[in-house]
Length: 246
Length: 190
Image: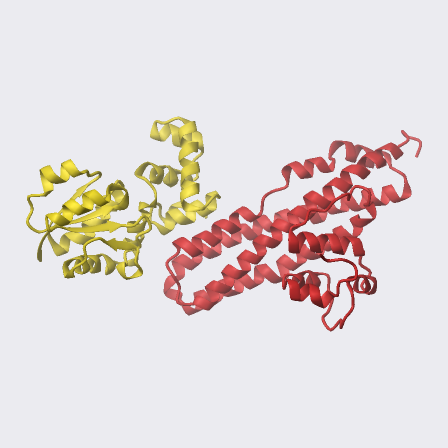
């Protein structure tokens, strides 16, 4: 079981996926025998948040009793935003790069490759729209809500915003982004005639598997960690509203 | 021209037509049927001297295979995901000899495009038809009207298609339909 005294190096040895968490939190390697608590202190991370997120990612362990910890929210939002960037800066361009290499190696297969490109392009647009909505609408709302909670105040227009567009709406319409990734995997594994560029196509598959797992767990963080806390403090912030007196 | 009668049995019209086209230039006579059972075989086919049956797997059981073998006929069973190359074990040769190998090589030497149509047997004829309309962007209601079936039946077909192919999204199904020449790339909005 991971706890605050676990060495970060042991965490990576236990599951290499921990590396991608460090990468998006911009924690560089070379940390010797530092524990999770020490690393969190050094990089201004919330230790309990780091623990919960890591346990969820590595062991699928659902977070418990998060409703009473609204101070997790800014750290969580920060992490989610970093993850969005990570997808767009790392995974997506890498997949595009390998598709481009296959096209370069096998120009006679341009029809099949153009199908891959068009499918992935469509998925990328969907992904960007999804992430932009969260970055531009959902996360600013959550951060403002948290700010109001800390200050114990609620402006009239924000009171109306909470009432008209609470986080429950986000929860209901939160899209499933991993469906198309699974389709793409199956198309490559089962239906596309094989390519000579085996290394490249295998790399694409590995990246798709990683991205699918990551996006699924990312959605879990939002649904199981963020939404319950936000629901709780929405009620609290609404109670701070004192009519038009503010 | 080889002195063999080839009998293709598959429930998909498209697959039957393709296999027939591929085999016709090479063999004396190529017959095709959408269904077969032992009675049909005994009544119409058993009398042929040199016969090779190429049959989708759902029509064959051990008893049927034994009777065919007993009559010194050749039997090639197409696996559901047959890709046209017997060396990859997608085709199961129930009675292998040099003739079976020759026939399978005829199938293996066809163009990539032909091979793709051969594999489209993963879906039934009706499911292929539904998939074609889905890939062309029609709604369940529009598909139901075109095929004279209820929207509920369309939904059932779609669930079966998804379960068989492992593809859920319309874009994914469209890519599959293009790869199998069920629709052309120009018709599709991938």
